[in-house]
Image (tube, rainbow, N blue to C red):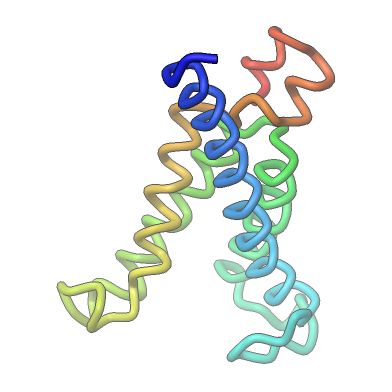
Length: 141
């Protein structure tokens, strides 16, 4: 096995791992908003008490997190999630400070660009879409 083919296989694995971990972490944010588990810094008693924008964010994070984690419809889900994080950054963090470290906006900024990257490149070789559809699964991943 050549070094080039080894790196190529490793990069596909790394992409799939990034997709899985980012989706799982984002799912956690959505579940914390919608069902209060795991309990986060803001305890939500019930999703009906959430403001509409946070309720929409919770659903995007939960459903999108599951889809990205599984590698199914990764591109459209990641694109939507990237947009959500851009909105969150500019609505919540940027008004506090131009600098992300001062506004505590680093997670939103990183999620935005990680999901944008996944929207462009897809879910990688280890995805449910590829397992179900083979080469045709690239369109779904």
